[in-house]
Image (cartoon, rainbow, N blue to C red; front, side, top):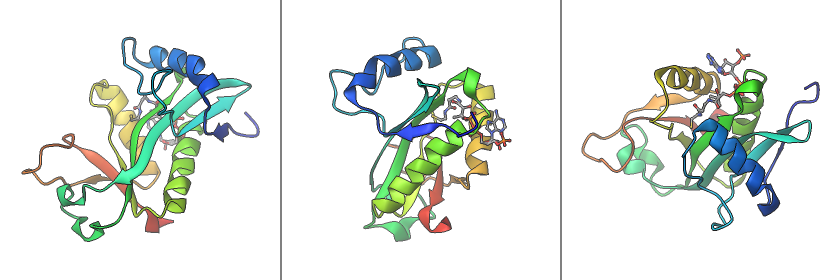
Length: 164
Ligand SMILES: CC(C)(COP(=O)(O)OP(=O)(O)OC[C@H]1O[C@@H](n2cnc3c(N)ncnc32)[C@H](O)[C@@H]1OP(=O)(O)O)[C@@H](O)C(=O)NCCC(=O)NCCS
């Protein structure tokens, strides 16, 4: 992978290959994208003509009241990174990093103040440890949640966009 992955926004013709990739991640997991929905992943990674990773997310996060250290961002838009997956055969080659950096760039371009990550809580302990290390490497830190507000998952990580 001398030139790195090709990162781009997918089109509906990519849905079958994306669905196959998703099934390889978690059999039975319901795709948050598909022919029935216009919501495609924000970005995909292609290596040697094959899709090997995807990231889903949006730029409409506004629940700052739930994040005790970020009430001052009220009134701004944030980005919500919902799902991130790299095919196991292609891990530790910089694909996840490239997908997240691309999403951070899109977040900055959209005028958002911060990227918030909602890790998948059904992952194994090993997967959770891997992704924590991964996001910390990219400048994310765990977010303190207001215990009185229960509509968000138990833990999130975030990265203010003014980090650059
Ligand atoms: C987390 C995940 C996306 C990382 O993707 P990746 O392409 O392998 O990550 P990268 O190669 O870009 O890694 C960048 C850096 O993150 C850290 N990192 C990544 N995976 C790690 C692991 N298993 N253990 C420790 N550190 C890790 C390292 O610092 C790494 O740099 P290095 O390889 O130079 O040491 C991938 O392991 C994955 O798909 N996991 C299952 C799904 C998941 O947990 N998704 C995230 C939340 S929804």
